[in-house]
Length: 159
Image 1 (cartoon, rainbow, N blue to C red):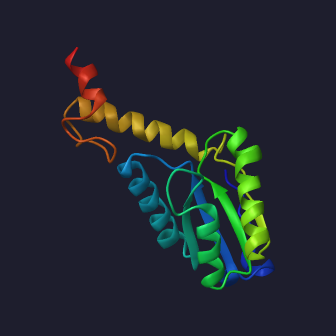
Image 2 (cartoon, one colour):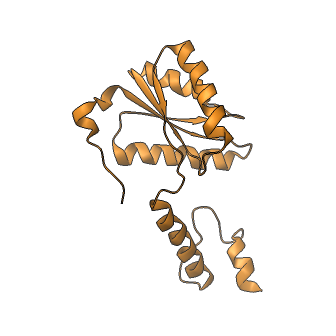
């Protein structure tokens, strides 16, 4: 079960910027999927200032996203890593990049925990597995990551 915090009582979310940051990819489809996720998050949760950022490779960078948040009225920024494990990127790279950007822009920030062992991930993995099994059986269309010709699970079904 996820703990819920009454952020409305302690903070005004109108001036809180949220940056969801991934690694960044040379594959445009990967970056587009991530940016769609960030847009969906913003729409579903109703936060007023949400930006996507890529740690490296492609814009928007963390600094660019942070500046966009401030330009939209943020007085503080939360960096939410779209990473599964608390590895080097979470422990060193993202905090260092964020700190440089925050000093340049002049805004306080917090780097949140990565996705890690969050209980919701159990359901996400099971949902993906169940969908692929249904797809192999012909009971479901290809998922949002695959198309009918590119689904690796279809290769398993043909063997």
